[in-house]
Image 1: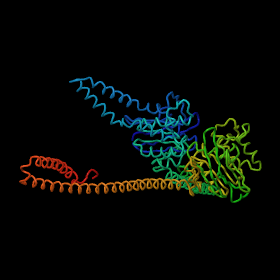
Image 2: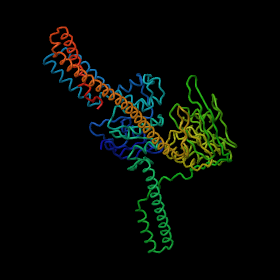
Image 3: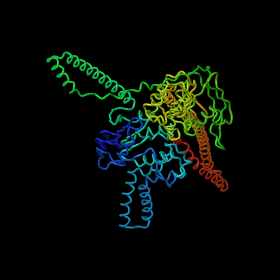
Image 4: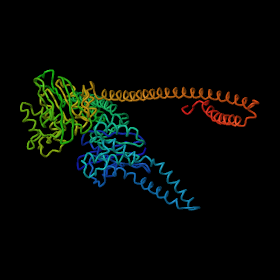
Length: 639
């Protein structure tokens, strides 16, 4: 155990948030804290970080255990560039590196014992540098920045100029590089695109420390965590498994609790009826029997009524009329902002009944495409054609379709006057507006609250083509599940932009992947899309390998041909050399015979001529012997 929460309780005034929360985390364990908005998840993280004091209980942290924390909102002012901010986490290593470099310079001027002492220091310092992976810290910084979605061209941007979401990514990068024993993350995926989320999943899964995550991203939790702590009605319950295990087990537990409660209520009612009947007999024995039963009934430990599944909030989406089979056709769509080309030559066809998810990296233009379809911004090129009888219901994450001076209730009631108050309240409750909350004015709501009002309003629209831009932002898990169930049973057509992969997995029947070269379609949900991406990656790697093999084969063939030509030349040169040696040896034999002839022995001029020829032949022959020896050895330089 490296960290434990023991009987943590917290209240604000009369509102109890946490009631005796208990859990612990081991080294390398990955844990999720889940619950509806307002359940106290972020409060619990702040208590662990000693930013808030519990009313009861304590947080126990192991000796020499470091804890790092990423809050949802970053208030810190950064005065460095993006790269400088992250590399500053490695300042100890930078200082040590500078000291090593300085010592290297100093040792050039040292001798004797001073040099020996400096060498010992140098060895200790370089060993420490290597132990801390000092030679890799620059590449680690670059890898984290790229993983979190920063391009190298952005590394020198001042952090003070970044958006809130970008600053959060910088803070996350700093936290990961600081490598604490326990990482606490509060909604870490809020400002990441799909590629960055996938990178973070892999990073945290392989992280050799412990991780505690608060997140509404169920797909993210599924990939990482092995334990879930659910906070519900101020109490904490531990589930050992990933998110999917928790979700299934939670339903089993709730159903079991509900059955036990209902069985106990039936038994209590039965006993009360028996007691009442015995008292009606009004006889001594019957009254004593009634009193005896009452005592037993009073000793029963009564079960609390479990939180009911919000069946009354199960949304039913019903199109008013059926559209034609062709719902949307886009051809040659292009959009630029100044010199920045957002996308071009976009092609898209959507048929009746399809549930399509448009995905892609941040900045590729997904929201822009939805706005162009809804005529909120103009296109540069291309055609957009809606099919017959298509009625669009549009959810804009910027909530531009609400009246600021209306109350939440009036916003829905005025749009749909035929609906009963109960129906409107039930829909609003599904999106976390209960009691007097429904009478708040739109202008007084937060961005997240306005988003939930827009979504509730859309759910009542009877449109047959829903276009949703990040509909699950600001929703708790229960509200997401309600929306998912409604969309899965929706008989109309859906086009959705979302970073919520669990939501996409539950609702989409087709994935459109938007990238620089256009749109690629995948028939299936998000899991199928990921499978195809892995297949494509494997095929690309195989193609690269095959290309390399093909290239290597061509090189081997070319090398073989060159070697064959080289060997043929060697053999030819060797043959010519042997022939010349043979010629010269025969010449020398002839010259020796000529010099021995009596008529030449007394002829000084002739002897001189023969001797000169003999000398030239011997000299050439000596050179040829050396050449022959070289040519006789096969070339082994490539072996």
